[in-house]
Structures are given as C-alpha cells and as structure tokens.
Length: 169
Image (cartoon, rainbow, N blue to C red; front, side):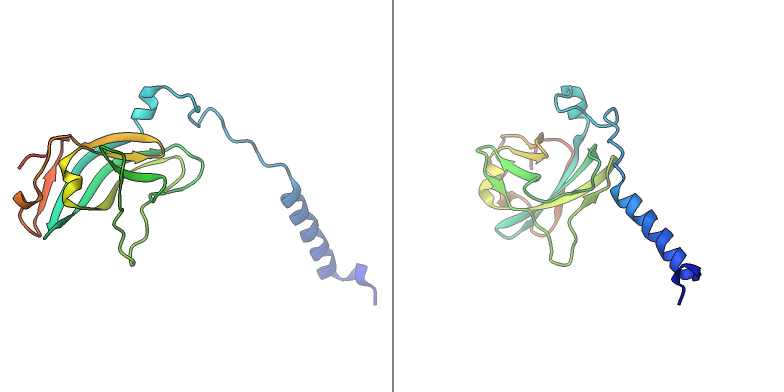
C-alpha cells in the first residue's frame, strides 16, 4: 500500500508539523510597560486596593465581617482572593480567619483587571478591641481604627454598616 498517496496521511503529517512548531516556538515576552515595576511608586500601589465599606453581623458571641473593596490586579495571571495572599490582621499582627462556605468559590479577579469584591471574615470579641487592616499581596488598607467596639452593643443577627474606619455604636 502506498502511504504517500493517501490524503489523510498528508493531513496528519502537516498537522503534526504545525503542532510541533507551535509547541516549540519561543513565547512572546510580556509587555513590561503594562506591568507595574517592583519598585513602583507609592501612589500607584495605593491605587490598587481601596476599602469601600464594612458590614458587621453579630452572631451571639462572634461576628461575621463582610469587607467590600476595590482591587486592581495588575498581574498577567488571574488572582484568587484567599490566604496567604489575602489576610485580615489585628493590631498585634494576628491573622483573623477567613469565612468561606463550602458551597462558595473563592473570589477571583481576572488578569489585568479591576473589580469590586467582597470577602468575609469570622471575628471574635477580642478582634474588635483594636485596629484591623486588610492586606492583599503586601498592600495594606486600614479597615478599623484602634477605638474598641463592644460586640454586645450590636444587635444580634442584624448587619451594621460602616464606610469609614471609625466604628462607633
């Protein structure tokens, strides 16, 4: 049988050669002007993370904190909002646990995109006695001032919203 006269053999040879060329070609370098430099200015870095509001819902002796914020992902890859890249820190540097239901997927932001996102954290009474700050990929934004907030002063199972860092009741 003459294999070189069969059209499907030629098709497979050409397709194999094209696939080999595509796999072995050198990838295009990233556009370095579109990405922020590692030593970027403080103004550029500050513009990528901005807390918009916080919603605290008391649950008997604990509370769920929903932080709504704007984030600009300047990376060429998608970014999943989960630890260790995303943390809520107390004034003494302790990490507050994130609150993700098993049925929920972690918040995700596409590459080179900006979005408004919401993250949830589970707070104990002592977390509300000092400052809180949100850290996303090394950028920190203040969430709550150092002024203490008594958890018992909040209504149970009713959300309370703050748009500033001064949480008063």
